[in-house]
Image (cartoon, rainbow, N blue to C red; front, top):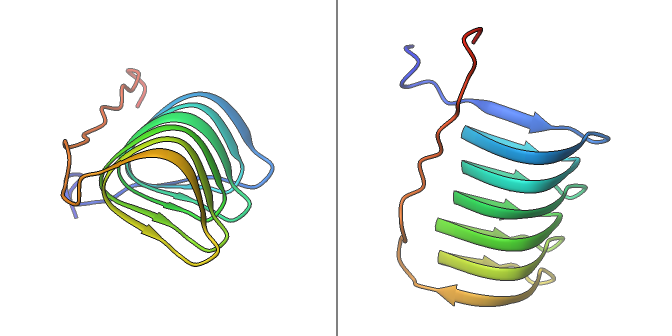
Length: 125
């Protein structure tokens, strides 16, 4: 399998708190906390996860807490344990019974702009 077809998986695990910007290709699972900015493809905020960030992603599933401005090119899914507040722009929106959406929402019902994060790596990568 070459690098172009392989999908990356990154995890911010429980107990890990990050302050800063993240650019992610592939899937990012957040079980800890993140404050800053996220640019990525597919993000999952786990039930214990907390994110306070300006965010641009292709898809996101929220089972924990999200606060901030978010642009989702395709699907924003808020699970029954999830909470989303701030400003939201998304292509498709799903909120399970019990999920909380307390945001200014623009729901286009179709894919919005593409999100292609660029990850800058040092010479040692």
